[in-house]
Length: 145
Image 1 (tube, rainbow, N blue to C red):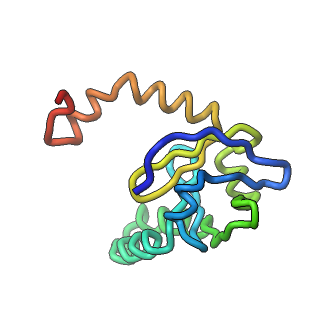
Image 2 (image 1 turned 60 degrees about the horizontal axis):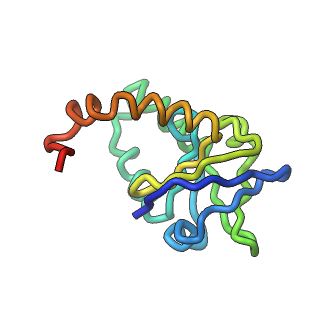
């Protein structure tokens, strides 16, 4: 399981260090692709394979399913770590997520997300303001323990 929030920089060559505990869970080779809300999704191979199976089950005659599949898979890149524990994020994905220098890497259960730092801060703030309301609509239990 991926948990936590970490600040990192992306260098001029498009390389970013991913936290060591995330690297271990992602394995030797993994997938980076376009995510939602202008971030990147990073999946361990096992999770990617499960996602691929769910995508195959979508109705191919549905325009939304085709569009989502096309964008998800066409943006995907198989990646590996370099000797310093960095990953080279392909240019098309850096452009999509507007990754320039400062990045935020977060754990989201079965995947890792890479965000432009300013975009994450803005998104996170907006989501925090409506956290309780979102929970009430999505979850069938009370967060007030």
